[in-house]
Length: 327
Length: 63
Image 1 (cartoon, rainbow over the protein chains, first blue to last red):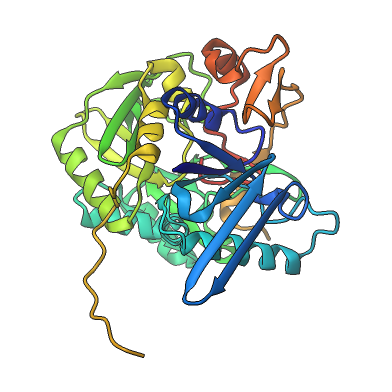
Image 2 (cartoon, rainbow over the protein chains, first blue to last red):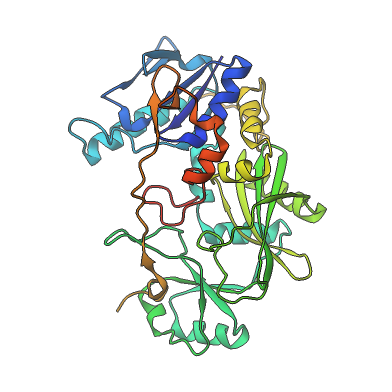
């Protein structure tokens, strides 16, 4: 059996997992969908009521029936590295690759359909609520009046992108930012705006979930209450990430979230307030983990390698029973 | 008039640093010039910040 990793060559975080897979003797094929039609290829035949398929990459050939799992890490766009790339070729290549892989029977980390849905932050917030995780009061709106009314109820607000995407023309970053008192909300009409009550935090929490295993890390805020220290990705803190225990209510909520979302992996961000409550901010279904492992020594890469290697099914959710009908 | 959230945008920081490792197709790993596997060198990974959560990634927005 073989583990297939879909990622780009420079993904050194994936390397951390490949090292463990190699050590355990589990065969690995690493393929970047961007390389399709150049240094990667595929073939699948549907005949006589059966399917046989193969992938080729880096001089390796793998039978799709021999795939134990597929790890979707940081794949490039399908055939984006082709000699003559085009949207049409990208769609053809994407459907051929992911369509055949969907029929392979391999376990996914994460299933592409589940991953696509899980990227939607409004959906994340609602699911977190349903799973019993505390969610800060949040408004997503294009109504300036609604924004003003929300700011009246929650005067201390932050704003962040709904999608998490960043504009590229020109390249800019949109960090989670504090909205100053008296802000003019009229520009809310020009784009959906996510406003959230600021959590006065004493620490950031990154909880990495691998299957049923939860590994949490905590990064203390050196100046609790500092209104300008909002987005940990942009903070200049030299405080390292440290291991921390997961409160029972969080563990229960996170496991319910993963089950409902059909995710085998998730990187959850929380803000810990002065009373110790972990407020759910988001779940990145393909979030980075290397920086946490480097600081804490937590065995995240090893846990991923073990999940990918494990025979049998530890599916995020049990498949629903369906009645078979003749067609 | 631009959307409200873009009032808080800042120029993306483009890294000029070149990574001191290259992909080895045979090993399916990135290796340093001396042949060591880059992923085993945690102090180097910390220094380079290549495994961090990166707001502003061009290709992956869910870091």
